Length: 76
Image (tube, rainbow, N blue to C red; front, side, top):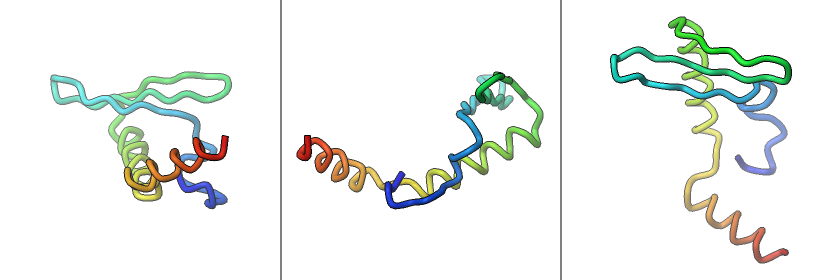
């Protein structure tokens, strides 16, 4: 994620995993400070899929990520 961003879609929601199962079902695992949750509810999975898409759109490109890492390594 660009370091000059004050906020982005990944802030405040906790971490999550999206799983596409072999049987075609989708499952989400979300994690916050005091709880973990697994859900297969379509609406909830779609919300997390949408959030993931926004995070990807806001994130650095692979080339930008490499440049950022190289810059950080050069500063240490």
